[in-house]
Image (cartoon, rainbow, N blue to C red; front, side):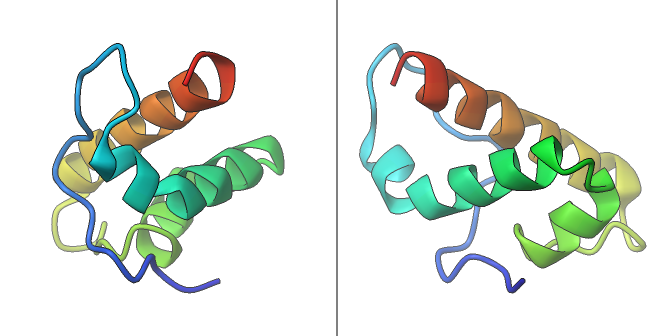
Amino acid sequence: MTASPDPVADAPPVSDHVTNYDRQHLHTYTRLLDAAAQGGEWFEVASRVLGLDPGRDADHARRVYDAHLARAHWMAGRG
């Protein structure tokens, strides 16, 4: 599992509509949902899927992971 080719922002967009960012990161969202469904550890998923280094700044990595996973759930349910 390798990181997304498109770097992720600190937070995905907050919008009631699908954005260009969402379209660019659809594969990332799918991988996040798959990893969560399989019980993947957040720090491993943040590293492998989002390209972050939780060992360097765990709080930041966790915020980015949580925000993108929440957006992925939104996309799966409403987007």
